Amino acid sequence: MTQIRGIYAAGLSILDENLTLNVDKTIKHAESLIDRGCHGVTVFGSTGQAQLISISEKINLLNKLSLSRYKKNFLIGTGLNSLSETINFMEISSSLGFNKFLIMPPAYYTYGDREVIDFYTKIIDQISNCKIILYNFEKLSGYKFSVECVESLVNKFPEQIIGVKDSSYNLYQNLKIDNFSILPGSELKLLSGLELGCSGIMTATCNVTAELSRKVFNDFIDKKKQSKNEKLCKVRKVFDQFNLVSGLHTFFAKKNTIYKNILPPLSILDEKDEKKLLEDLKKLDFN
Image 1: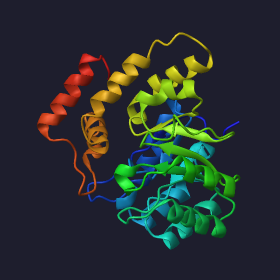
Image 2: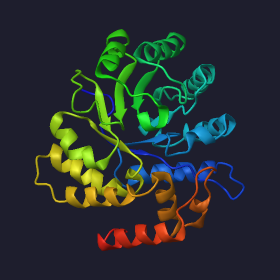
Image 3: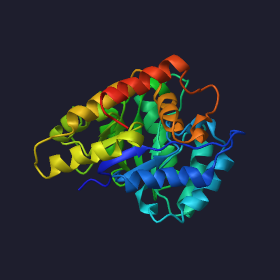
């Protein structure tokens, strides 16, 4: 049985007007996603602006998150380029009872599979009591995992490397590893992925599609006729027209203006794009 299975949202980070992290509201938002159907939430992934938020703010959140009734449902994104900072952040997380992490290889620099294996090896050598979901997203890191690299990491660290979030979509159709979680990064891949043996999804837009995604997942598990997958995919395609972080914050800001706060160089959608986002969703009878 895979250790990470189901519908996972890449949670948003909620900021105050001075652009500091609002810990309480970020946690409340994450918990609400689980209440609405997500099996779990990743905090401090790319959707949560992890690379832009200070380590001290992240630690403050983890301290309060450790008291959440849904503590076991959270994955922790590291969102750091520095190897030493990644290890230190994981050590702090582990001391608070979090041992499942989403880790992307460092951005900006050019490297290959050998260097990636070395990167994760150095992490696990320091923190052996961890469970790692590899984050495969070439658009953000500049590196795309190969099937061979993932297989090598799992063979080397079968207890620690437990899955992959595949947002480059070159793995989920091709990886075949027992007891290994494969989570495509889009609702468009949910049903087809499940049919191929994937474990579920981990996506930004599950912030708004939690109920629809869970229905599709449950109907597949229960071998029921699909009734919501078409609408789910259409909603995802609407958001795919825009930067996902900008689109999601714009969407939620219609109910609560605190979501307008977003860290530079990100921004909410301009008036034209906001209008199109909301009109396209209205055509789908989605609110």
